[in-house]
Length: 77
Figure 1 (spheres, rainbow, N blue to C red):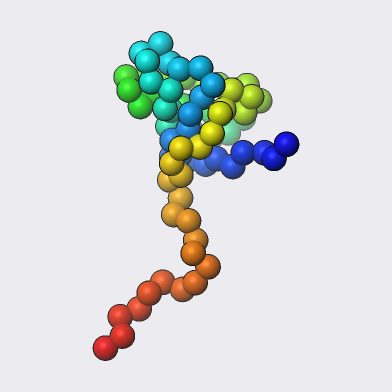
Figure 2: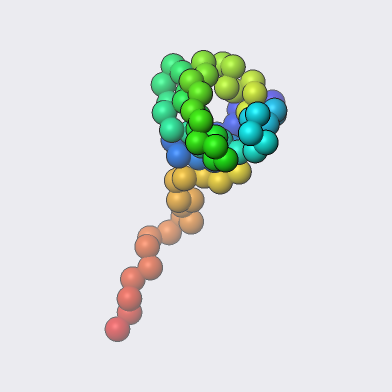
């Protein structure tokens, strides 16, 4: 099974929804523990990394821009 890639600022979907009803969380701190903030009610929770990785369903939106494999476009005049 492939390990999911996630980073600071990503919006992730957890297996179980938050009590407020939404299941979208934003990663706001990473280290040995990961702090996630509910997108709906703004409540934050500190979760140990192994528990976070087991409860993570998928990454909905990544904060890091995806690299297209080329240099940035330049204006040609």
